Amino acid sequence: TTKSRLTAGDRRESTGASTSTGAGLSSRYVGSPSGSNVGALSPGGTSRTPKGVLASRRPMVALNPSRSRNTSPQVLERRPPDNPAPSGDSLSRMASLLQTQDNGLAQQLRDNQTLAAALQNAVLELQGLRSQMQEIPPPPLKHRPGLPPFYWVPSQDYIKEFDVQGGYGEFVTKKGDFEDEGWVIPVSSSMKMVLGGIYRYSIKIVRKSMNRPQLQFGIHGPAHQKPWRLITTSRCSTSRDDEPWHDRPQGDRSVDAGSIIHVQIDCTCRRIPFATLEYAL
Image (cartoon, rainbow, N blue to C red; front, top):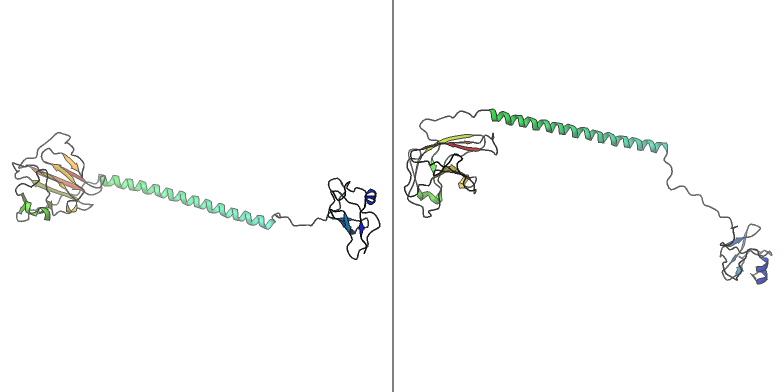
């Protein structure tokens, strides 16, 4: 093997070489006229010949990529495209899938429309049933001669305040004056009311107290809990739960001794919210 150095005289004989030693030289192999690579130019300007290869006597040419238009040919590698064009079978499968999805959405839309129509029909039927129930007259009152509708039951807290008499416990008397003058203590009956029924009864005021004539009637929940619907006998004003008293629309009216109060509680759900209380003197 032989070694060669590119001198100043060699640079003059080379065509297209750089004007300064080692400046702008590429470290790539340069093709020889015979078509084989015989050497490489380093940035320092030294050319080495691979072992087993004879150097050509002809001067080597250093190509400056920035100034020479004729570059060595590059071998391009063939690579398959990243996104190949879909074939006919793929297009057919995609079209079938889209058609299946469209059919499913259309079926779901039809089901929703059917459900909405059924719901609307159910609402109309319910409104018709409500109107029919309001037109149905209440059932006639069934009397049991000789038997009162209920008997009086004082609570445990006020059992000493009341005196229950009569063969069926139908008479109740308030004994004495309660310790708190501003309170009206309750006494309940044995009547239990549930939804769907109509309850009617009458109360007669036999006599009133001269000192404390305040008396109220109405309905309470179990154990005297809410709901409360009360009417006072001093003015016939009404109250519900903890709300203030409301005056009688036709004016005040007193319920005196000897008066009979007829009461009706309608729990048939024909009226809003679920029951009504009506009375007459």
